[in-house]
View 1: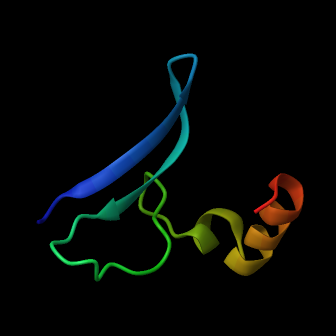
View 2: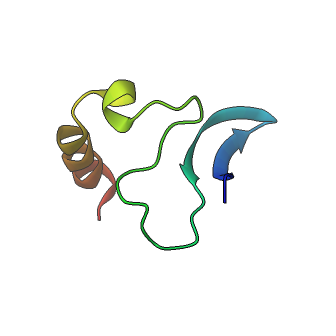
Length: 61
């Protein structure tokens, strides 16, 4: 409790991205993860639904 789980993507010793979300005793945390600097998906890339559809079209489901 009171901690955050972080996943970082690293290429050639440089962090290029990642996400974070709060740790909870229960599985009551809902929604998308946040960027490493605490921004939501919409703040990073605009409309999340549009971005997700483009991602699925490019990389598959």
